[in-house]
Length: 230
Image 1 (cartoon, rainbow, N blue to C red):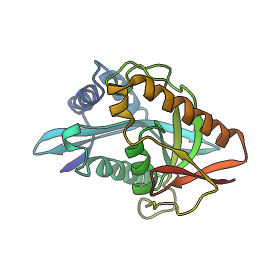
Image 2 (image 1 turned 180 degrees about the vertical axis):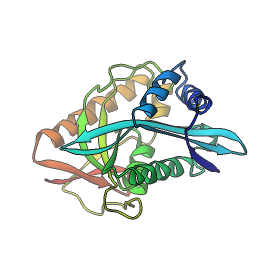
Image 3 (image 1 turned 120 degrees about the vertical axis):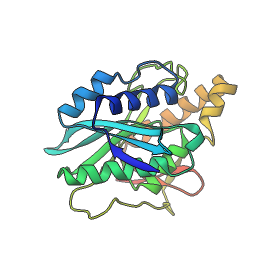
Image 4 (image 1 turned 120 degrees about the horizontal axis):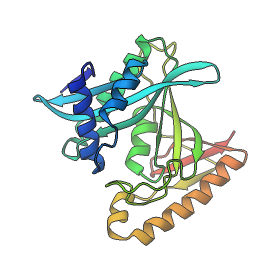
């Protein structure tokens, strides 16, 4: 596998085409948008296996409390390569790029109902949950979201002052936990009503966390979010 920084219009087109395949929609991220954000200081990269693009990531410059970083808006991997370390390689490449630019952090959002993403982001990457937003992007009718409300958690991945990307681990203890279904993506295909019920219940729990004296400390081995006092 080879991961490279996007450097040409053809690369931008390849990244956009990869996103379209993963999300099952046309022009999810238009080529001209990728070109414009790269010209303004953003970042995109491609992962290739035997010359075939199997993953991509794209982001733009961001600021937070007076610090500069990169907001990683989209990272996608073809399903046939989902467990081959492609996503990890893309994120580490992204972290190294941000470090070379002198940036302090990388941020992104993910659906808190998707257990595999929670594990990947909080345990494998060591990112920290900092915010929660209900229906952040509105209703999206693509191949993954399937008309669901887009509740999202916002995570921050430390860059500044570190020689290498952080690594996370399971959280052993918590005051209480927020449940995550084993496979919400399958539920959305087979039983949308049950999937909607999971959204409602988890939303209530996350409201309790972020409206109260709590924070999400990370991910537990039983597949739930660990909640502790702030």
